[in-house]
Length: 78
Image 1 (cartoon, rainbow, N blue to C red):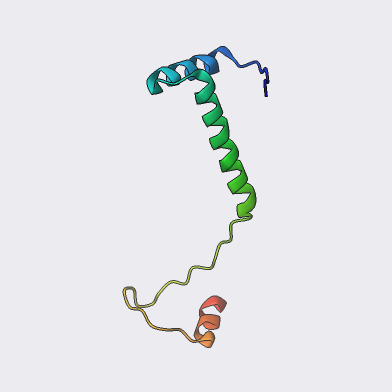
Image 2 (image 1 turned 180 degrees about the horizontal axis):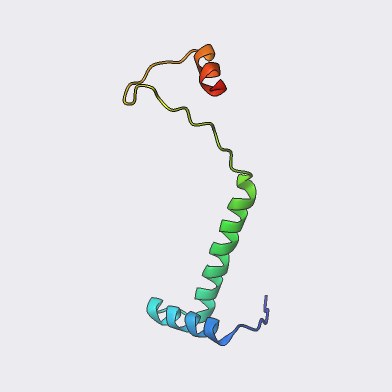
């Protein structure tokens, strides 16, 4: 499909420079850039909202032991 778009001179210059570096065509570089951006956009859209979990500080850093639900409730209540 043929689509015509107007690009600012600095964008065209950057595309041409990148195409020379990659020994590729301006069209191929532009298509790759658009595809990468669209893929990133789709990943962000499907990822949803970021969830922040509560950070529970250890009273004994470096030691690991299982906490009971009651202990976790007590820590979160502090």
